[in-house]
Length: 190
Length: 256
Image 1 (tube, rainbow over the protein chains, first blue to last red):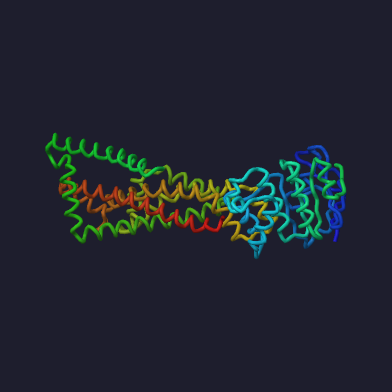
Image 2 (image 1 turned 60 degrees about the vertical axis):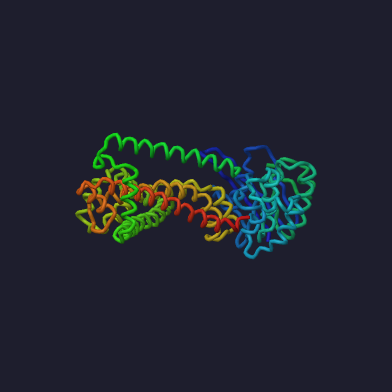
């Protein structure tokens, strides 16, 4: 079932950050939200995740849907390894399978088992992206997921996103049109 | 660190100890009155003599068990109240004045007051509990309130169970506060517990034995008891931190 967002508005201290936003998300094609900073992209992201309440408007189709996300910050448990950061979001993690996926994201065996606090920014970002994809979810939301990744890594990671997404709804906030192209996504300007 | 560096470091520390032992011995010889200042040699003799008495060991067990009971009760209560205070502001506002008063009241006042309410035997339990509780509470409250909210949001989005949240988010972030609280309060509870026993004089306690040495002007034995108190305080603190390290290592084993 699709997710329908109708006339969503949100203000902070009287300053509107999101005004009458309407959007439909389907699992047939990802959506990339683009636009300058301050247009309410992250606010919409937080409303969809249930972390912030909208002032007005409606969201239909989220009932019984499970979400996973890549936040603007990595939000990884820094003392856990990359492998464990993935494993904790699963009920019955297959560590061999997870290691394989981390390997496809360009992490070595040693890097997979090190505390993530010892990984580079780009490596942590890839772990956060993979966490959202291995999680048992119906909707994947990503807030500037490819920020800080070099051109080649970005292509590898986006290929993995497409492969692991399966039949799920994907909403990506990005500033780069090339991301939308590589994801074959619809672009929604805010 | 290289083994040779470790040994050099230990040697330097031992040199400091021997220096002050020499100063002590020299001062005792200069004064020449054991009743005013017992020498290290006579203190060691008194200590050896004490070790041969069963009453010495039972006094240690008597005091240690009671003071550690007070410490453990304060630990459990402090963690629970801090957890509740972090969750509910009302609990925090209710307990804030109480803990401020406990922190401000001198330990001697507490001991004298407690003597009116509890039997001498339980005095050290009560006093060590009261001394430790605010430290554990304040440190744990600081730890709980500084847990990374963004990680808790992540946990909510990914539907992590409460057990996983405690194990992977709360424990790693609160543990440094817990360790700091234990390190600070262990020494304090031991000293205040013994002080309570000196004033309350429960029969068979270390504090009572210490008081008796003053009564009979047995300064070497008084020094020997003081040395024992210092040694036990050191062992208890190191032992507890070692145990905490082992428990932490067991928990974090599954982190990598």
